[in-house]
Image 1 (cartoon, rainbow, N blue to C red):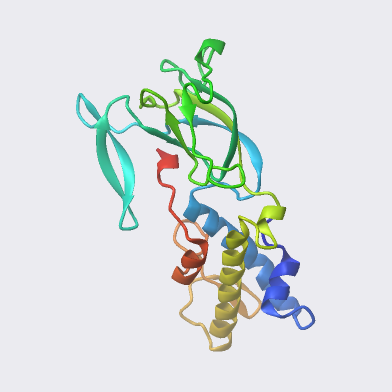
Image 2 (image 1 turned 45 degrees about the horizontal axis):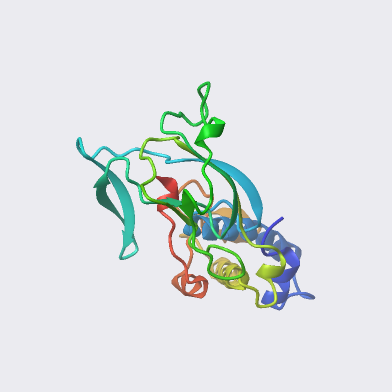
Length: 247
C-alpha cells in the first residue's frame, strides 16, 4: 500500500477523465519512485505505521583511543563530530516514533547473533533508563531516544529495539499531522509527470532514462531507485535529513 494512490494522483493532476493509456503507465511508474525518494530524504523505510525490530548502532567510527565519531547535520550536510567512546547521547529511530515495545542494551552483544545476546536482564525501562519527547498527538517527531544518566554504547549491534513508527491513513489525510507528507508527494508526482511529458514532446534526446512509449523518466544517481526531490517539495515537507539513523 502506498501513501499516494493512483486515483489521488489522477485527481491532483486533473486527469480523471482524460488520461491516456501511455500516461497511465507513466504515472504508475513515477509513483513508487517519488515515494522512495521522499522516504530516503527522511531516512525511513516507509511513512505508513508499522512495528519493526532494529539493531543499533550500525557502524563504528574510530577516533583515537578515547573518541569515536558521530555525525550531525550542518548546512544540509553530514558533519563528523568527535565524541567520547561509549557515550552516544542519542538513539535515532524511524520517525514519527509512536511507542517503544521493548528496548535492550547489551554492551557485549553482536546484533543478537551470539548465544546469550539481549538476555532479560538487559531490558531497559521507559522513564527509568530512557526517554523520548512526545510532541503532538502522542508521537515523537524527531525519533530521538535519550539514555538517562549515561550515553548509549558506541559498539555495533549492542542495542535491540522493537517499536512502532509511522502515520495512520487518517493522519495522512484531511489536514492530519502527516498530511504535509502526502501534499509533498502529490506536488512532486505532478512535477515529474508534467516535466516528463514536456521533455518527451520536445524530443528529449539528451535524457538518460527508461522509457514507456513516447515518455521517459530520468532517475537519480544510485541505481534508479529514486528521483531527486525538488527544493519546493522539500519546503512543503519541512524536511530534516535523518543521517543519524544510519550510524
